[in-house]
Image (tube, rainbow, N blue to C red):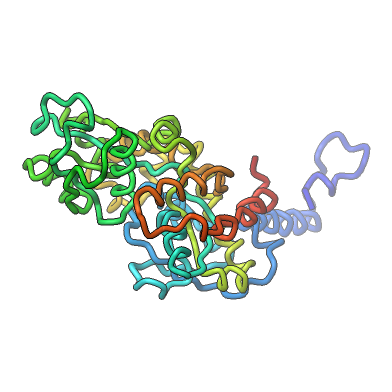
Length: 353
């Protein structure tokens, strides 16, 4: 009940607070504060479990940021959840954070997984060519026989670089892919001349751009660049679980989605000072200015609502099939590889627009 409901009709001014209505005022204020602190918990159905393990390889990655925000601001607690994050062995965690392409790859091997919340509506990766080793770059044909650094074989960076080559009339086999990891190792590989180009995430690309060390030739950090490269929306990071787990824990996964999308909404209006105050210092890479510059470059790639774009799964399947000959398009059921139902239900608990 709102405080104004206690003011009798005809009173234009607030009543003096007597001992009786002071007690009412205090209890009503406490109730209102509790409602604000945990808006979703009041109407949320009973959770099947309040503890979840979540597999994640890189918690400091920008597309993991909505979960970091949700953790730091207590959104998981508000939903009654306790999460354990870790680099768990494949299949041993309740939920996994990874590229959506993994869900399709798993399905092609007969494993039933489903994405239920999208974190990255674009890959947030760019392909940069070294000014030092390829000073007279004109087109991707200049990279034939040269080395392109990627984070891992079969990764999203590997897929993006291969897609760029294919769209230019080349074949992935025309270049040499070198696994250089991410972060400082990737930077060192390009700066030392071990590789001639690099396909990587932020903040590696921004660090190289700021020093004028690379020319960006393919860019999925923006929706426009992603559309130009893949020919459609290219969903990337997502939360997924086995189809069996999704079906048996709908309330728990709804609570998880509520918290994560709340983090996304917070990010849409957060300023630089908000980010610096909220993100753990260890994730700021020892360089706050670089972190903020890199986040600004990739902010558009972070999903604002957790929803999978309608044409996204087909775009991913097409790119993956061109990249991996083992993917049989006619045997993939895209409709079972993701669900938008959880993200669609978030709006009511949080009254978000």
